Every structure is written in C-alpha cells, then in structure tokens.
Image 1 (cartoon, one colour):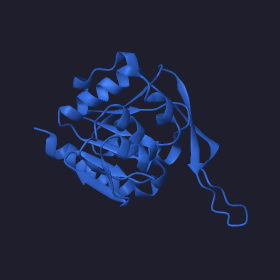
Image 2 (tube, one colour):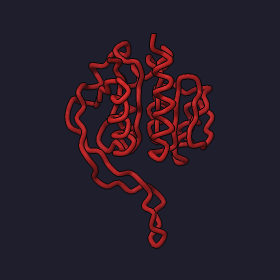
Image 3 (cartoon, one colour):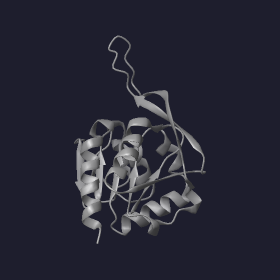
Image 4 (cartoon, one colour):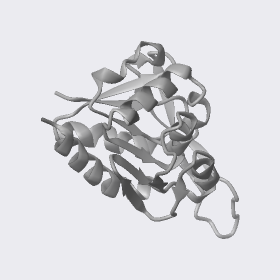
Length: 189
C-alpha cells in the first residue's frame, strides 16, 4: 500500500487533518503521521468564530481530538512516500523549523510526487522552498507566506499546479482530496 506522509504537531487543525487521515485509506493509501516526536498530539478547531456581535480579527482555537504520530521527523526518508498531505492549523508555524521536515518536503517535491496542502500548511512549503514559481492558494492571512516563498497567491478555493494541490481551508477538503487522489493514481506505475 503506497504511503502518504502527513506531518503534524500540536494545534494541527482537526478538519484539515482528520478528513485526509480517514479519506486516503479509502482509496488504498496508508497515511503515516509524523511529528517532532512519535507521540500523541493535540488537534484544534481553528476558525474565526461566526459571531457578528463579537467579531474576531484572528482565528480562535478550541481543543479538538488527539492524533498519534507514528514516526519522528528525524527518522523520515522521502523515498518511503508516494506523496505528502500537509494540513493547517497552528502546527505548521512551528514544525516548519525542523530541518529534516524541510529536507524531506523538498525531496518529495523535487521528485515530482504529489503534495496536497491546505490552509497554514503553506508555511511548511515556503520554509522548504518548494513553491517558487508556482501558483497556489491558502487562507488569505497566509498569502504573504506564499508570496515570500516565491509563489503567486491566487485566493481561489483550489489550485493545481503540476503535482501540487493547494486549498484555502477545510471548506475545500473534498476538492483538494479529489485532485490529490487523482494525481496519486496518475503517478502510480
């Protein structure tokens, strides 16, 4: 069964992460969850609350479910994976500093394997220098991260550029996974 790398950390977004975690095995892919350490991580609901009476300028985080990383970043090898799924939330903000995660992300991208990315996951792709010259989308507040990575930010719900699939947020989960699975199937011998 082909393996898909899914990096997470504390404050990974519940809907971004769990939708892919459940959906990919339905099409015959094994999701390998990786983290700074192989341990249990806290996921969060990460959204701007839809309450016009008390507006928020930034996202609010509420506790969500937990997910165990099976492998630590330091033990990752790009050649073990058919592709990569990067979820959002606050986790990308700090896990992007891990040198092994950046190296493996870049190696997966350079090998032409499909990568799907939602929301704040773009911070990992920028840190790994994987989006230079690409068209991407992400949540508007991460547009600058995409542009600093050398990409053209579109703001569209979904963008496919070569083997890279990007979506704005959890609302685009179905669109992103549909395209990601299509690319994974096309890449299989």
